[in-house]
Amino acid sequence: MKQVLRQSFLLALIALLPAIGSSAFHLTQPGWDPSALQPGEILLSSVVAFNQPVLWVDARSQGQYEKDHVPQAVLLNEDDWERQFSAVVQRWQTGQPVVVYCDSQECQASRSVAKRLRESGIAPVYVLKGGWQAWLDRKR
Image (tube, rainbow, N blue to C red; front, side, top):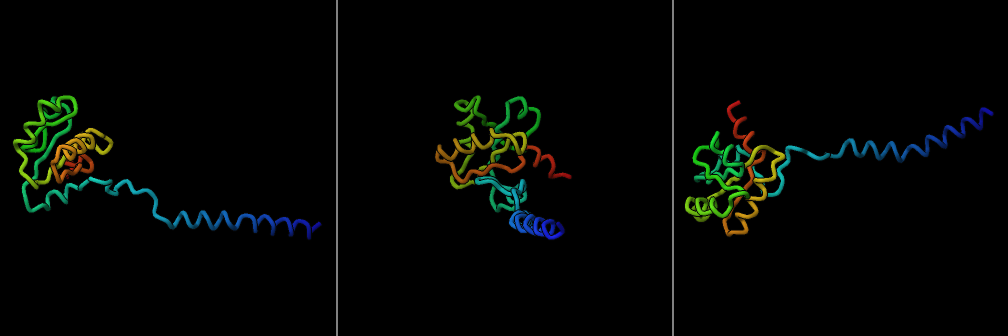
């Protein structure tokens, strides 16, 4: 009986080895990093380091923009693209970096506006990682 138990224990241990090895592998591999930049994103610290003027584009609503915005930012959102786009074109100089922001990390408006700007021939265009909240947090 003892020998049967010992053999059963050894078989169970041998069966567990691949699972143990697999979990150890996953523990040592880097996982998803929420601080990693997505394609087209830029950190505020990188924007500040530019050696040239940046055109800030606020992709939030007009009400949010009127309440507060990055100094000298121009308003451009999907809701009123046709009317607001001309202001961006008038302010943008060829080759000038454009940084688009919206409410926060989860806001997709800045990505949509940035994509349309690129499709309109404006470049380079970046999305501010962390959005408006990153701008507000810069003082902390």
